[in-house]
Length: 239
Ligand code: MG
Image 1 (tube, rainbow, N blue to C red):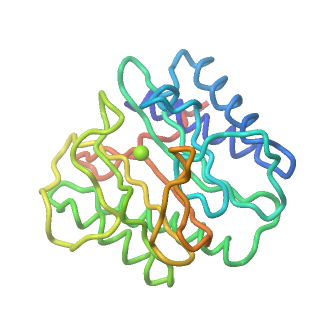
Image 2: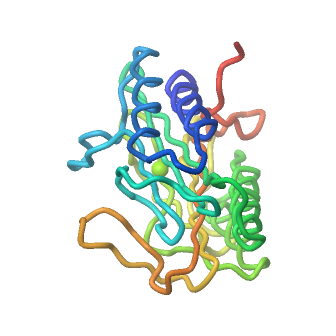
């Protein structure tokens, strides 16, 4: 799973490096697919329930599951990119939101807070903690900043399938839920909205947007629970 996570993390980093005004999300998708295939891995999303691309590219008010297209990115946009890779039957899954050029103060704060909410959730991935300690930590950071947490989409167990039990909501009651034990691996992925929490799906059958049209951000890591604490698997190998 470290190998799969490393490939996914490198693809995400290469996409992030390429994000700039004028580039299309279709081009970013090609960069991610080339990175994954050149590592001898397979894209986890392409063909998953019919999804047509390697990355999910969710722009501005899009929350998750956006389909790459030929529309050039514009200065001030924010783009959430989700990417997964498969190595030897094991999955890695990660996401981040990238600024396109200079973005508004609200957008920058939303991205910072969402990333910090993920870090707070990861910090709770320890033997003996309860599952919804993770959820509560994410929720607390996001809501303390005045933002809203998406309810309809959640993190998940991950391993030989992309989505395994349990579901990991981004809201919850600390001290409740299953007890965490060594060897569990979770994809933790807060989706945080600048406005209200409500979302809806577009007619393309994939793209999820905020109901009120406000910005949304999304960060994700695949994290293993070890005796030494949380181990983030979606990080690039040294060198
Ligand atoms: Mg995921």
